[in-house]
Length: 389
Image 1 (spheres, rainbow, N blue to C red):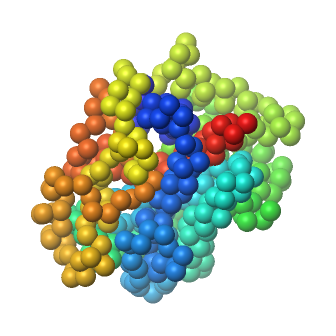
Image 2 (cartoon, rainbow, N blue to C red; image 1 turned 90 degrees about the horizontal axis):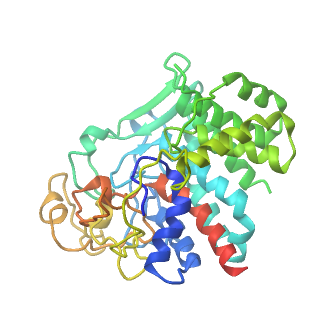
């Protein structure tokens, strides 16, 4: 039984159990956790450090920001393409930070806390550049998605225009600004020892947790946002914010946050498969293909993922430039497995009937993203701890 993609990334908590359990009788969650974090190295943009473990990647995007006369190198390519979108990148950062805050001790005992912090730090260093490079501006993206999607080339070779996008008081973008605030607030706790209200709720929730200032809670209540939802992802954070605030009410006994407990419970009831109020669509089987949808985990995993860097030969093995059009044939449309294994990458998964053709051109099922991987890190850390107790 697998969740239909697009319903709720929070269901990765359940699918991380179901999918891995059916691949192995005794799934190695420690291995899966390590690989889920390693994936982020394969998504890095900028100048790579000497500690880089995914060695088929090289420096890329070193001129990012030049069109605006600022330094916007670094950050992550969010999926199988070569553009940097700060909205999903900031969400990814928040989710990684949340996982680390909840399960940092377990990660430390497994030797993975350093990797988790490195994955967060790679994003926050970039987000801080975006927030401080020019007074009054927040840079929110680099790269022209239309031009980029017409090319199949390595990040190291990209020659498409690296358009720079920003928001400001005269060109507002409260959604991405609030998500960036949430990411930096959540990350600060890790290293400390026209409105979409879900981003404002999410951002304020993390600012409240980071600062403990009642003004944020007052603001949260003023937003209302009492509609039910069975979705939690980078473009809808209501459920995540409610769970975060319900946690405060239950653990810290904060009576002001008690109204969020019922909202969080409603979300859980809407995504559980056997709940009378479930509204989430599942596939009919419980992983009949015995597939691991994490690349490099188990004996049967996706070999032809929709990912430029993975599907094209590395700079080391093929030093000549691969042009914008040069990657389509023989690489994109090749029937051969990708030459580079993007270890730990979680793809979109099976179709409505539990089928998975492992087709590189079928991006909806075969493309990995940072925001999917970010959502599964915490559940994997939880299961490792449960497995060892």
